[in-house]
Image (cartoon, rainbow, N blue to C red; front, top):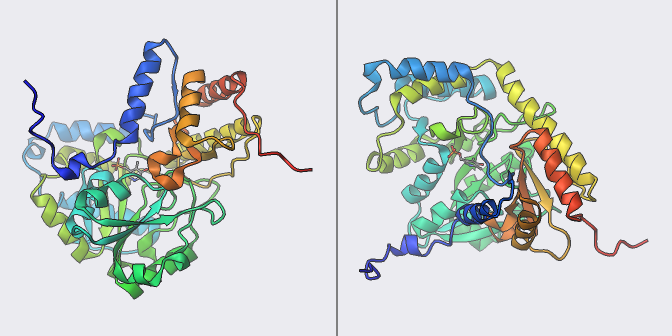
Length: 400
Ligand SMILES: *Cc1c(COP(=O)(O)O)cnc(C)c1O
């Protein structure tokens, strides 16, 4: 018996396939063929969670007072840990009662914020390429997404001056993310000032995703939205413990910023979930209070891999700019090759998994994202395999 007559709702049916799910299928097939995969496709950090965090979780697990439903708004002590951390990093004071809300990972919060604020047909500004939740959330909500194309020429920054006046007038929400996944671009403080002024002028809800707050190198300090005067009037910022603290499986993130906007998200979530297991909130507090040298270990690991891989790509003809943050390189496909074709060809010929740039929207076409989630031995092996397969970057008809 088939269930053809029970179709998922349009909001589900109309979603294009999640590229990572499709990539998983292709990886499974390559494995069946006996290929030893070097997976640089996902954004899944490869290190263990710091031991003090695991120890704190173990202790909290033994405490029966953590075993019931946690409070909807998160535990008071985790919210305080968030605002302390925020003050220590950015020098901005936030109210733990209302200006900080724990989330089941930032992806959950980003998508639900879209559902809490976007009505069908509302205009939403989303860069392309972007992290999928930034356009999937608005798509699920039925929003009318206006692409803000990012280009190498503009250092992958949003060109605010290129947004037509009529679009800016209509826009209700703008999503953005620096340091960026997938492009690894960073934005100067002046850019943040410009976008805050834009959002204030047009009454746009500004949503910043700062998931790489602490994965920065060479002395670079990412800017936080709420450092910008006036940003809290119109904006919120999402954070995650997944990346810096190697806690992707724990599902802990949070949002900070405008109280009224956070309240709307909280109201929706009150109807959907009960928040994070209280024992994990205890562990998350420990993570946010870790001494800086633990962070430096993680930063050094990614910086070393970045330098190693940029050199490896250079030996194959690629010029990949040095990134100041994130765990990615954003690498152009050989001229004339599309992202999907290039990523599939590399997978089939070498077993190296890269993410096709178009997984992040049309604006990612022509690029692949390479995650720095393997040690230098494996990264070296990946480069060797590309070399042996004759995969190189040869610029179009170099003129003399
Ligand atoms: C990894 C990532 C997230 C997801 O973080 P979770 O807290 O694990 O859901 C959100 N945004 C961007 C840009 C990311 O790269």
